[in-house]
Image 1 (cartoon, one colour):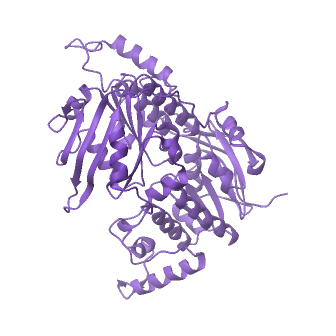
Image 2 (cartoon, rainbow, N blue to C red):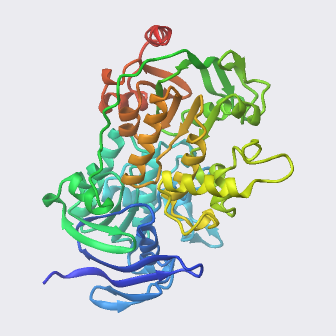
Image 3 (cartoon, rainbow, N blue to C red):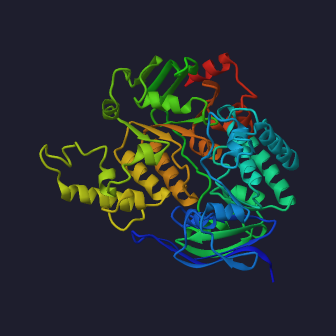
Length: 518
């Protein structure tokens, strides 16, 4: 019989609003393994991990740690038990040094002051033990995404973690940074650590994990040896059907230019250039991808194109119309739809109903509004059609959006923005944090729009997504275009990773020639 370091038996979590996140979840963790947990959005993975880290309490069920029944009353208790969690969104203070971030809440004292020398020595000792090379005196805001990931892991190790929960750890990493992370995780495993690896990337599950537990609709569907399963077999258990991981797009017929960015530069608050001399054209019936590690100007570029930032140099045209003096509403009226990166902040009104969110970009239309009153029958019918067409899992259209899973919230954003047949679609990280089934559905919708002659600008930190969907591809580094591929097939993930890290660059002449040929 296996000796499990951690066992969760028949875990149920029922929230006050009636949502059942976990119905009957069973999970067994062996000491010294890397164990994946996979499932669709809303399957109950996040809730289960919150229970394991003491952030939530189960409604019923039992937890055993090293064979003894226990309660994890809070995160402090989890840390005391040797459980650490590295969240998908890093919990670091940008203005602090690595050392300051790592000792936060456990600062060594010298009299009444913090003993930073002792703190630095503690961290240096930890770095030597785990061979995670970082400079404790560097400011966190100056670190690459991959380095921040290391700091988060070191933070957990410094607090004595022997079990590490990693939530989507490669979501924003380049292939090279992912490979480096996997080397470190294997070393941690060799040193006796146990790792819970939550991911939607089944290829990575196959690459790094020993076993995988599949959760579906709050139930455990089984635990399997990864070596015995293919990606398709895992996705079939998760989704209940085979999910195509690649797309056979029909050859696109590029039409007229619908979006032009000319000599675009943008300065940040401190006067430094965040964007420098950006030029590209987006044509009807074409998906132009923008790849790059986050923080290299993509967010600012999209903010300018969508009308959220105005103080820029250069110009942006929708068709022949400059957007410089247009409001956000006027830009939308010219046929632009926008799937934002942060669905909760920019994509939905989370306390509003599903119905209200779905009509957010068309409530002024004569179809739904006669100028005095809304036509509620038409609004309800349209909302129900969209919920059905976009496979949104919900009780009804008057359910509040905040009660849905992340994947279903994303589907609402996609349904609202794609169902109006836009001329131009800006899709910014359109499948971040959604499961393989929902991602496949969203990808199919984007391809369908492209085939119907919409011009699509796709910003993605997921290289597989960028390469599978895009016809042409830009790579950004430090606010500049460092590579332009008119045909995505001209490159591969490894080469793109080198451009994203700034190790490799095309010449300005090569980039200009590629842009001119579009």
